Length: 264
Image (cartoon, rainbow, N blue to C red; front, side):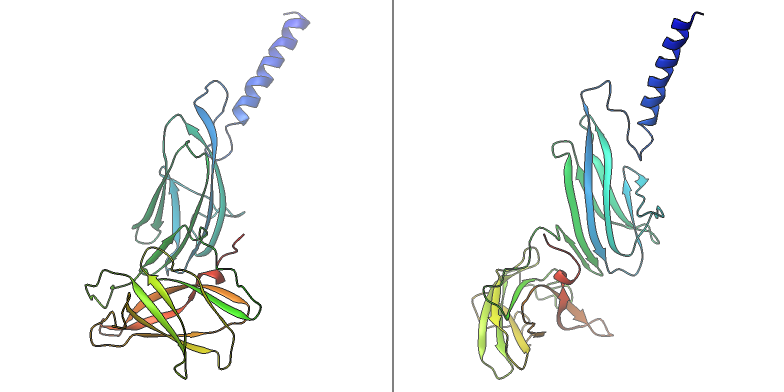
């Protein structure tokens, strides 16, 4: 074999080696040789307050998280997951309880939107999708306090049978009405409401059927205690609670989604 043939063989081998190395990142495969393949990315941003850790599977393969390549997480998770779409295939993201193997949530992505974001907040009996979609309201003046509300566990324990939306009548502790937030429901945040900060900072919201002053739980006045915070806009997740016997005991309003995420 002459020198020219040797150099040609070395060049061909180098090209083949480079192509093979391009396959080594996660599930990435070469983009060369087919027009149907295209790069994809899903940015995962979430927070889990569940007791057990969560595992993310993509088409049956666990996603590695962090520098230590963990395959499960608790609390906060942030991951830029890069891959390749092969033709019209879906990428199926399954969030499972690592201990019980229960599938908590399933998401489907495809090449029609090659770059996407998956954001969520998880807690016992609560899973909020698209946690970053709606931002906290913009305060109109300094020293104001603002709120939006969502009620994913509505009727979980109260079992009222009422299927309409709720209004929240917000008062100071002396009974003065500050305002009414309308159409609180399980699936979407209410409209934004804001007030000037004042002392004492405690405010009380009474939950009633929309357009009325009637409690959504028959024969029982349902109130939620909250605290005004100067220059702070909150996304409050209302949550029905139960007592030790499993009976409905009231509604909690201390969970503020804005404490867990950075909204850009």
